[in-house]
Length: 282
Image (tube, rainbow, N blue to C red; front, top):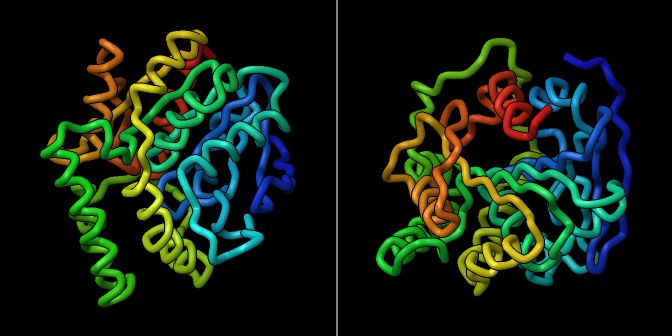
């Protein structure tokens, strides 16, 4: 594991100020987080990558230290994709590597389409992207996201967490992890991030008209490699798993199988780092 020093920075973008974190040496690898995750969510993963990559993580606009100029304005998936491109223009000298998880994978796919050439490779791990699915499955995916929002509105996080676990096929009582992980308690800041994620970013996903075929076509034009990925233990009924399979089908490839389930990057950081290094040629 590398011994490096992390640096922090801010970047002004239209409508927000982004906070980001950089650590390591080598080609730029942007990690785009799932759920309520901010730049520190992958604190256990980054040190195992920093000997091979300059690892960049960031707080999505509206989360933690990335503040909105107008908190009442809707946040869109296009905003997030544009933020990725602007952040990479700041930290990278050319096309960068990106590993996106769930929400982060959906952002990465849209960044490929909106900003051709910004990425050389995108690993898209179980993207939350209903538009990848056939109509019936898409409707089910949207209904599950709406049900989580309804549960949160009725009973807060205590009601939302079980709904999220069911949506992702997670059994918290049986979830396996590597040893020695950094505790991730539900602090007030993390609770606020969950609220923003459920109330605002779910809506960004469910109202987004972007179709992933645009990313597939853009990647073909620019030579960007898109690698769909799934968790080895994710249930096949989970909609994000099926989104990854649908993406793989469009790309005429097979999805990479990562350690753990939907949240394997945080539950198995050492094994995930080994997988990323192997896939990205480091």
